[in-house]
Image 1 (cartoon, helix red, strand yellow):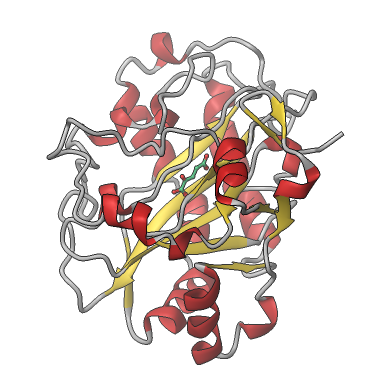
Image 2 (tube, rainbow, N blue to C red):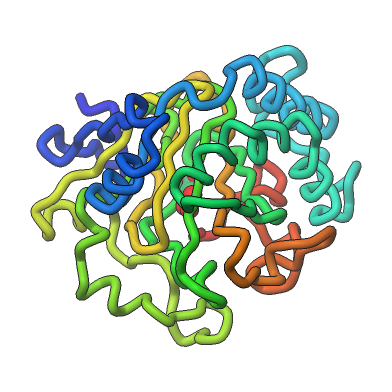
Length: 300
Ligand SMILES: O=C(O)CCC(=O)C(=O)O
């Protein structure tokens, strides 16, 4: 039985592959850039101190314990209920405060991640202030999409960094990359210049589920058992999403995704500053993370 699941279906073993581990290239900036161009992503283990990651995780979970979503002292067991609306009626403000916790930010924007991005960008970098912190209960998943429609309004020299806050096994629905999708000029041509806010006639979601896409394109879905401290980085034209979280323990999957760019390139004001509006301008309230844990996610 495959450990990976998409929309309730087991991913056939032939469609599943391991992300290439580029940890050994960490001190070699040209080699990292070459690997990123070749594979469309960089997966590195142990970039961040696992103790710092655990502290960031604990900070986030403590906030959710306080609104009755996580069982106290359980390290992430969903209670099945939520008092978030009652105790923190401004859901956007609540989520912004969770997303700006100092222990969490020390992980998401700390020296370890910034140093890696400097190697990739070959110079000084900026990480977006607006972050996508995600706490997923079993049953949650993110559909396949490219990130370009969200983050390339100013330019497309932008990288996404996805990292787990704690271990995220394949059963808990980690990030999945569609192998070689960064070379699909037909699909990339569709999203080049597509702005999900300005063109409301289209959706950023790729439309088909990951198993169907891998089968029809003759490719594989690449993932890993992520551990605290690992990360994956990819560009705006790499198709990705998540596997289903179908682990029976009920432990939540905690992760964040943050975009980075060269400090010399123009900044998209939606994502930078003290009170960033985010993709649509609605602030943190528009994120899946801002929803009480007993509510379903929107597609992305
Ligand atoms: O964590 C997820 O479920 C999806 C993350 C994602 O789509 C991203 O990092 O761009």
